[in-house]
Length: 345
Image (cartoon, rainbow, N blue to C red; front, side, top):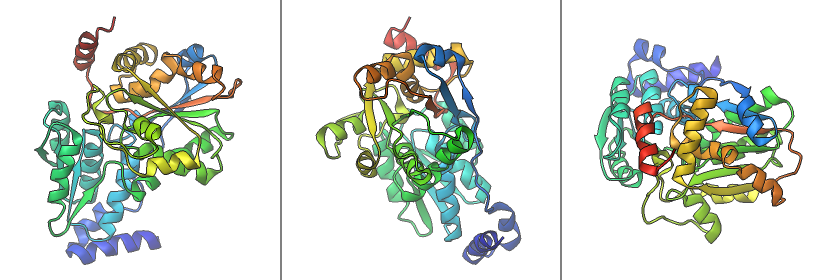
């Protein structure tokens, strides 16, 4: 009750709109506890129990609402008058959803090649949409310029401690559901926010010994490049079709995570990620975007088995958790176009 009273008070002082904002600003989280279900099909492929953490059923369509919702609520407490977020789509939708819940205006800056369905979704959430640049990094420059306006706050898609703090809730849910730690957690890496959040969560619940298999697509492999170089690396361009992984440079925090937990970085081709999307659709009747397909490819492309054969993962894993990060940048038509483009059978 005290935290709720403090939250409401912060917004009332900032805007003076007492009655209306009391309804909009809430202490509870904007994300939902998502299902963790064992997949018969993926378990057959992997030869060990594979559990899927279904972040695609979050209100905003992806895991992003965990960290971004938490960040936006904290900014509302401090009197933010306008949110601005650069995004490839998913972070923007999470920010727009949070802003609508909080009753705060929001501007989302997207790359010019963003799909019309994502733009429509954002406008449906009440967001102002601006298009800038060919990739996220260029849209982010525009967002940072807008955030210099009085009362405006920039919502980073992945690079802020509050974002990581929010994403850590996912691991608390895993512990609640599983009880004992899995043999590994598989996730996709774009800018590194999910990786940083899962690392924080593993440390929090005492599972720091659980390896993280960090999946990227070639052409958006900024984390893998950074690990190989031992320092942050800026890719010359994003050439992968997995647009949601399209940050040319990961957050600095990701390299720190590699010192705190065991992280196995793997890169797959676009074709493998898209084929994983199709196989997952056939196996589970669920459509996810290629960024999520990168994580699923750890199973479908035999990467986990290879890591075990190389001795980098234990030979007898009790189970594997794959984070189905979801995503809004996909439709059945887009999937068919990607398969044709990449020559997938």
